Amino acid sequence: MRAQQIVSLDGPRSLELKDLDEPKAEHMLASDGRVVVIEVEAAGVSFPEVLQSRGEYQFKPPLPFVPGAEVAGTVKQAPDDSDLKPGDRVAAMCMLGGFAETAVAPEHLTFKLSDELDAAQGAGLVLNYHTAYFCLVMRGRFQEGETVLVHGAAGGVGTATLQVAKGLGASTFAVVSSDEKERVARDAGADEVFRSDGGWKDEVKEAGGADIVIDPVGGDRFTDSLRSLNEEGRLVVVGFTGGSIPEVKVNRLLLNNTEVVGAGWGAYVMPKPQVTRKIGAEIDKLIESGHVRPIVRERFSLEQAPDALELIDGRGALGKVVLEL
Image 1 (cartoon, rainbow, N blue to C red):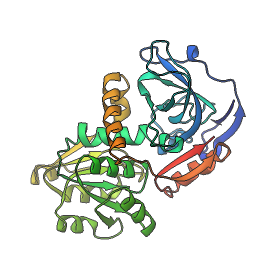
Image 2 (tube, helix red, strand yellow):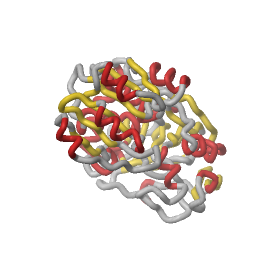
Image 3 (cartoon, rainbow, N blue to C red):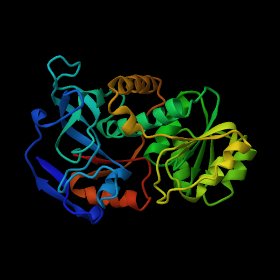
Image 4 (cartoon, one colour):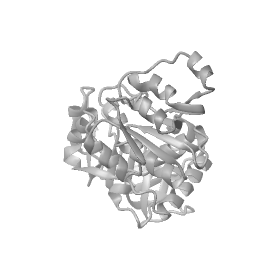
């Protein structure tokens, strides 16, 4: 099979296209020993792959390795007693190995793909939308009618969070950096859009404030996010695509009885198959209601994987970035 391997830790250009043996189910491990072999039609590209190309991600496989955490395609092999059968269309979180023509994923992270979505959308489904639901409901304790503010609102996690929040009954605010990103955020369901280089914090307060802030960006906007919260508001920390990890003076939390909450979806759900299945069922409901439709704006071939990583590295991605095989 063809696959992209990270062969050095020199950034996005360290990927090389190789001919490799196909992975076999019996060679792969899962917490419960149950895995699914998938013929890949599309693979999602995300910020962790950029970090992996430099050895900066917390998970550091030995070189060389095939990156790619999420795929969509067709089942080739599944456990005999599984609900999944050869030929089923699926979306899956494989953790590694997605930038290839064949990938292997744990059964509990493999989900039947609705006919409402194509393979490219399926490749943007698990990581972003499961993260969005986890952040909003399980960590942010979202209640219907609350206002959710989303940073990085034109990216994969941002657009997913806006769609899930709208589907759950939220009012939605988005913070973006350009006209084009504003259009993407509005397409994803943002009711109000604010500019990151302007006085967004004061504008958010004037618009009624936020009950929950979802922040995958970090950096110097963190303190203003706290200031934009309503009483008993929650700031949910998702990641640090802005590059720097902010610090908080905890007296700020006293002033308005606010909270800072960490949301590490992967580490939490990996040993809990029942949680991933529950989130998957909730996302399926939002697909059926028409609220969840992954926005795929950037499509690359497998050969162009380094270009896809460079786009994300340069903060130029709109919606989900996908490799189509």
